Image (cartoon, rainbow, N blue to C red):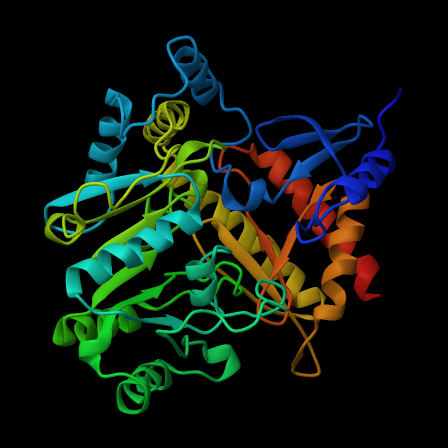
Length: 424
């Protein structure tokens, strides 16, 4: 029987819980670098990258070879039962790559949510405090503790009742929406005054560039003020680099551009080129606050994922992908800025490195009514895009850094024609 997208969608609706969303009603047959083919044989340019997972592209040959070689040796032992060198090697690499001029240690897990939850566990064990401050519009995952930190109810916790206690929400600075750096710092001071003493707060967690929240970047000056505040009160600063990490912003971690280092950094997504791997890297004394057995997971630091991660790091070095991220970002911003001059609905073009987004506004108000139309129209023209943002009015681009210029140009041309069709 010939497979079709409609047929698979019908099977999906009958078999898969509705809580598992799906942005595009297509089903993948195969993929290579920045190209995806669906089950009907149609070809798409991938500007989504599995939500920032494929900085090295679909099935990079070096990653594919490394995983195949590992699969011929063994697939699983559980590192907590029988160790293997690749886990140690990944930790050594991350201890070097994560910013901060101090001794570091790393622990590996499977998903970004796991990394976030374990970062909070470590901070609580180290400080002997329970409270955590997170930010409006921040996204930290869908598991329960991570969901409590995530600053958006619908759709992530809609209908689930109140989340866990001990999390307090500060304002994330965003000049475009009227929140200054001073406002953000004052919102933390209000928490200290009204909700919890600084001595009750174990950690402050934030994304250096908000992902689902709309690609708003914290400025170096804000991050430096936050670092000073944490130092003054003995609070652990956690940088959630699940989406910004592994080179997307033009440095391996976005915090390298902030002038200060976090105490703990989370990573996942692109670190293993499409294989499930996450982790936390932090100051050695903080990381060692949890006793043996308190961190881990059956599949944490899978041998296959570790092999992939080591290959990804090699690819970044050999193909100079950090420089490439900035080249791609400059190309995207230049083209999208030209489009902004043509279409009044594009209110802003922004991003660090190749983590680029446009914000849609109309009559000085967020215009989410265009987002779904843009995604559908672009898909019909052969381009996969994603939306995001507190108001759902941001279109983001997460094209693989390995995509050739001609393909990026083709994707941008589709974006232009899509805007012309939707906005006319």
